[in-house]
Length: 350
Ligand code: ADP
Ligand code: MG
Image (cartoon, rainbow, N blue to C red; front, side, top):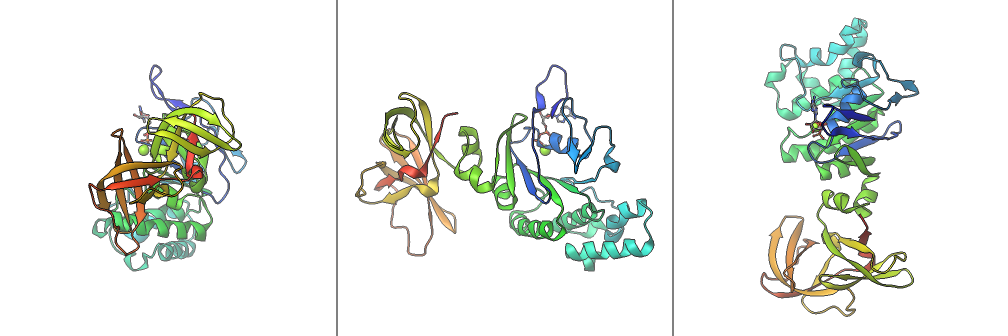
């Protein structure tokens, strides 16, 4: 699909093509303005694509208005009706369908139970916390049993701790109801912890699509590597080629990586995640990919610590080590050696 809002402007969505399996928890991830909400709104029928089509469970959605699609959308603002209590907010869609009183009551009760809001049924939305409102909005979106539930940044309004708990909660609910979820977020950690598959977007296009682990461990290009978590990029040229090996000449010296042959002189970037960088106070036995530097900063983060090491060239490298409770043994300003295994680096050509 493609969508352009102004004839002369850039495309908000630019030739996106994706197939989502029934029951998936599919996440659109990308920086603000990359077209995530526009894509979601086209699925819901709130925006019409300029080109392309949407097929849900075999049915073409062209010309099908939002309220006739087997789709429900949960907005970032939750958009609850302030004058209706929780139960009536949840039952709203069912009452519009003129379902019988008992069926409505039964389905609403089941939904409130699912989101753990049974005790709040009589309360007005104004008396609820952000997390509680989020759960009511979710119940309201799910009660009509759509084939597809769309969630636009559903956790952004919550504080950090609640956001992390709600991730697990949403995953649990997703498994229980068996409905296909498509969620939009700009938060890479949220995307990785919840998705069955992630599509990483930039400027209206999908840069890479895959399971969280695949996208994180094997990013297709520099943008994806940098957007999903911290990464050290060593830019260079292929200087020597062996059997399953490359030597890359970089600004910090010659580095070895495990990779299929590439032409000599090819421009590449080696992407090394901070958690794959080892640190030692003495040079490591194998001198492969071992670089001396000065430890500049230590950021204690609770479960792990982050380190910044300055190499002779002035370039900073980041490393992360889990806090195992035995102290870190490194002091800022001290000489240190960092190293990484040849198979810890991902070779990027774009
Ligand atoms: P995201 O959700 O990834 O932050 P959006 O889909 O909201 O991005 O927006 C993508 C691009 O389309 C942005 O440049 C935005 O300004 C533009 N855009 C979105 N909606 C409209 C609209 N209704 N009219 C004009 N431009 C729009
Ligand atoms: Mg958006």
